[in-house]
Image (cartoon, rainbow, N blue to C red; front, side, top):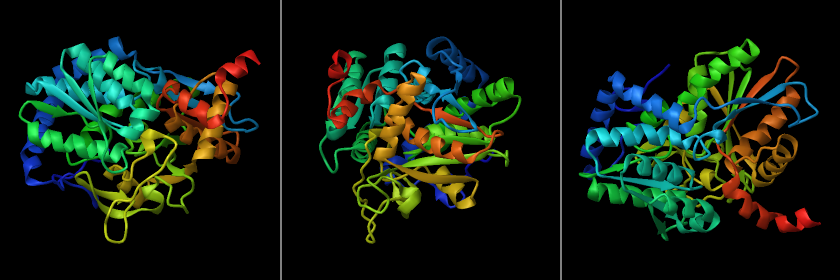
Length: 401
């Protein structure tokens, strides 16, 4: 398994591209991380909370009807069954324990779809640490349920009204606040993005997904998957399920970006497909930018994928060819969302629905030996109201009609 070099680079990507005011806070986090990672008692507490509080390991569920007709087997790695309903809780527990170890008095976080914000609010309530969450005003509106949940859990939600009012702008604001208040505040980043050591640290917390999944695949099927499919915004759930398989050349790794209205349009959120190399939020990676280096507005039906950049390790995996990246449109993701609900009784997050859409296509190409594991990164309760509006009909009308 590869690690970043001493400068925080995965190949040509990563690093610590930050203003001077953030150099010392990042160095403090890195030092604390290295000490914690070398302390067995830290990992014992981490895994105990994952088992007793989150409910890990999450199930590996065979999808018997989804994507039919097809020959290959599809199985879902059920991160939607975790406490809080997504993979995000794995990472937030790790970072909150680190913050507690460092003596920090407050947690701050950015969030797009709200799942990360809910997860931070949850562990803050569990550990008794106050939480402030920064969220784009557009996302506050389209993810109203998660906003209410965060407030119910005791967090303060700050709508961000600058820029596109989505995840990029929420991240900008969280960095600004952290820079001003780093002495007593810990920034819990939600994905494998940002300046070193965050991309590596978040990956190490999320790799529990593939550590579980590898054991489950061998126990259930007697072999490893032929293909692993996961959605990619920042990319934490994807690296969570990729990492333990990176050295297995016979396991194909597929990251699925949000094409939005199409990668040939301006309304897209697929930096690996149509972006270029630049710097965003402290690291060098692929992002959607103009020829002058200005970050472009993005679009995805999924708030969690509506982000102009991607984690640097994904850029490295793309450049090296170890993982392949594709893009799925809003319409394709919506169709997969409905198909999964109707055929498997599972309401997937819109983020996960992007991975489901590509898995459907892939399953028709693979023969009977194909075993495709899809990371079900989260559940779709948060998206149902938005999807109801997009469908143009009330759920109650279907029930009573």
